Length: 371
Image 1: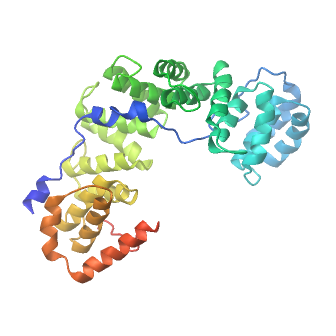
Image 2 (image 1 turned 90 degrees about the vertical axis):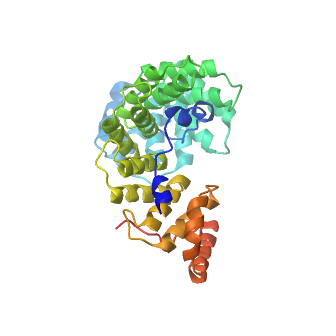
Image 3 (image 1 turned 180 degrees about the vertical axis):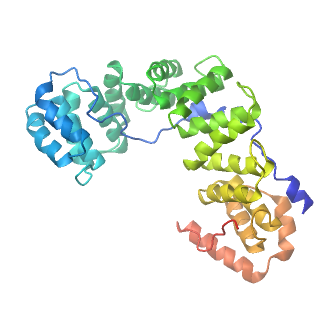
């Protein structure tokens, strides 16, 4: 068992290992942030006085009343009223969510020059609403909104330039767009720009600036930024080494559900790196990450079950998590060698049955939890 114990060290020694490819593989989960009608502006004429009651109802969460007040204005061409209706139907505020109805109103508002509506319609277009995914059209809409200095649109357009989605790739243009949006306080852009500085792609490598930008984004709740900053603080990369602050950032990202951060936090608890050593909490976070598919966490959890560290010793649970990790391509020949003599035919059959359920898209019937 000694070899297994010495294998429980944190392999993420350099933040650059995590960032090196990040800047060329960034993807974003489509959201409709920054589309609420309470603070938007439009190049189209809008009767502010007429919209005031609808805005007041919207801010008071009286959405049925807001719809009643905004709809006549929207039908007359008021871009802010159209944006409001689009937001309400998209978010399901007081009504059943209806992306198609949302897209209809966003389209009207976008054609009237509303930057937030252009951004929102671009996001829906990326999702294939109302017809099918159209990255070229999404890019066009983001460009229109970005030209009006809409930070979220600038960030999305930057991602499209980075990946070449919907048009040619241009990392320098992506960096420029991220920079504009980051200066406006957009957390996503701050994170993406920080990633470019960290990787030295699109920007001259500057780890100090990368850490600064990650900090700005993390302070706004950006999960990936908190994780990357946590790794940098652990290693003293671009910032002064600070294990305690690193643990706080990793905890921020782990609580938000990021598997890699949960795994890193598990190692921090296991090693007593920046917080009190606690094998039970280590097992807890390895479990969280394992259930979210992190192969490294699955292997470490298997080791903990085999050794009885932080959990009640359970060879079956160890075999199950090791097998799941192996199916993800993670090899642990040491654990496989020491565990085999204790594996019974019944135990193996039970594990095989669980693996078949997982392969079919099911979930574990008998996952183990830390004691």
